[in-house]
Length: 274
Image (cartoon, rainbow, N blue to C red):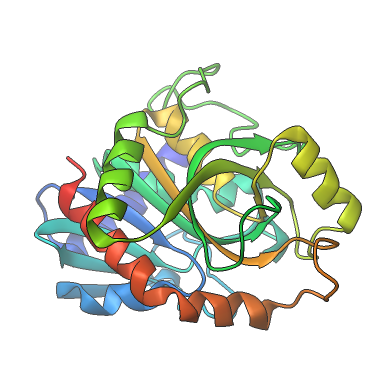
C-alpha cells in the first residue's frame, strides 16, 4: 500500500467519525496544553490506535487522541499528543498526522510545544512565536519516494512560518495582555536534554529555543502548502545557563503555571486567524 493510499484510509476514517464539511484548522497541543481540547464544543474524540496507520503517542502528559469540534466559532481538529523521533518513530511517521490533515482538506496548521529557552534575556514561562527554525539532523520527514499529490520533490523553505499568521498571533497577544517573544526554534533529537555545549552552539547559531518536535511537522506542512503557525512555551532554561539539572517534571510544572494565559492566547488566535 502506498503512502497516499494509507493517508486516504486514515482521512476517510476520521471523516466518517467527525462528519463531512470543511475544517478550519488543525491544532497540535504540546505538553501542558492538552486540556484545551476539553473546551471544544460538540466534541468527537478519536483515539489514535483506532485510526488506520496512525502511530500511538507514548509521552507522559499526552493523551493520544484527536478531538474535533468547534472552538471559538471555528471548526478544528486537535491532536492531544504528537509523535516524536525519540520515541522510535521515523520522521516520516512523525508527520503522518499532518499529511493526513492535508488530505482531509485542512489548510491551516497551528503547532504548540514546550521548549527549552537558550536566550539568556528571557525566562521560563515566556511564550515564543516561532519566526524560523534550525534543523541540523541529517534525516528528513520527506526522505524517500515523493508523492506528487502532496507536493514537489524540491521546495522552498524561506517562508515556512506564515507571516500573516504571526501578525494575527501578535494582535491576539496584545488583546489578551499576554507578553510574547518572537524567535528561532532549533530541533534536537532527544530524548536526552541538550548539553551545555549544545545550548551554547544553539545560541551561537541564532536559536532562542530548543526542542524535540514541531520542525518535522512544519517541514511536511510547507511541502504541502499549508499555512503554519508555531508557539513555544519556554518551560526551562537550557542546560548550563542556570546552576540546576533539567527534568521533565519542570517542563510540566511550568506548562501548568502558564496554562491559563497560553490557553487564552490560543483561543484568541483560533478566533481571529482567517
